Image (cartoon, rainbow, N blue to C red):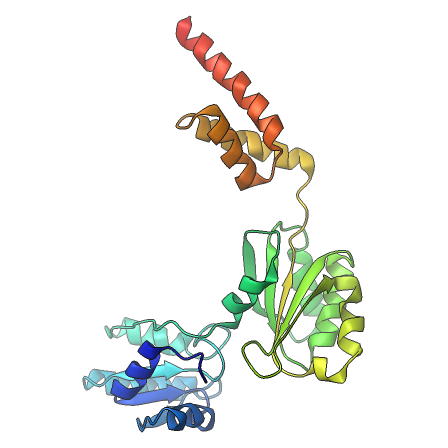
Length: 271
């Protein structure tokens, strides 16, 4: 309950209508904070019809807030269709920051990979799911996905099979709720950790898997490319440090290479 922001509460009090993924869930929040704004249901099965009703209200000059049950609307939750139609109709669409399992999980993951790819929910069908993972197996990006409790065991097994048992994973379950759990380990042991306690298979999951390792030769090539760009504007030491931080290439090697490149530049200007 306390994850909701002061701004969000102000918006929920001031709008003419609240479009909610599940009005029963939203009612608990509204009652807790003494908000009596009317609600209308908007979920994945009725979004087309509900969007038409919301648009009609907007065209009358009314204001509508969109909320989902346990996250941010349109981020692996209903709402994207409504947002697009509202904007296309000329209505003003305003983001109100709030709870997000994606950013909450990443903030405590401690993954070495600085960049990530958000996959949402993977396909439910096993063959399609493995095919999707295979397409991303070599990406040097952390893979972040949501998963439901009844499918998390199968998904962890597919992750280990396709990406390799040695890859690191952080499992975040029931974030900011009573039974919040964050576990770090490898894909090879993730299934056993889940099976060791039946309660660990309950709730909503965020799975974060480290990216594929970048081959050292490719890392070195990228480091030298970035170094060349930075040297045009920065001193040798700073350029080497930044190039190493950006690409992961060895700093000492980049520093020596920077000295060589700077030396050639000076010689070229003198001649």
